[in-house]
Image (cartoon, rainbow, N blue to C red; front, side, top):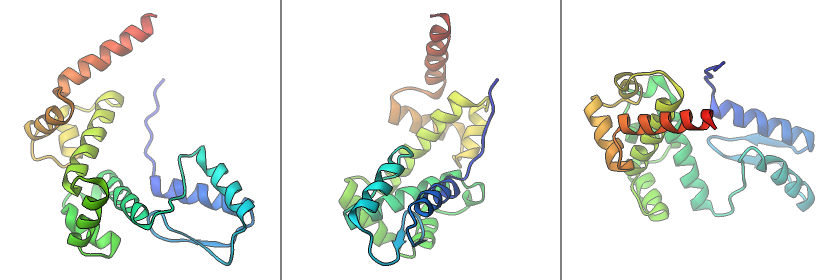
Length: 185
């Protein structure tokens, strides 16, 4: 049996953080997109305990302010791609509104730190989401293209092939053969 889930990544992270911070009796406020404000001083043992308890969820502390900012941009992009209501909004407008900075500033910081543009990162994330949807749902390529806000299936297929070296249908066939082989063994 396969169950299909819809989840709010942002809410899940906030809930995990709240549970672990409360368990360690740490006074805090949660900011936007990956910001945690500790009230007062945090002794090293509590910081280490918190860091270790969050590792299993893939949550880690970032020491470098620029890296933190880039991670916030990436999180905002992931939120945008999952948000059905954000389809009609340009990436630049969405990020500027979410992050409260000009898009040119965000773009410069992102490019300096990652050596790629926000636009290229968005394409990579969209292709990753397309791969997930191809493998884990019964959606058609037309439905996937619509869900990821592509203008057409041809546009999705072109970016998919340019990024992965495979067409979406070839990718699906390979994944299906891989799954069938694993079931046989």
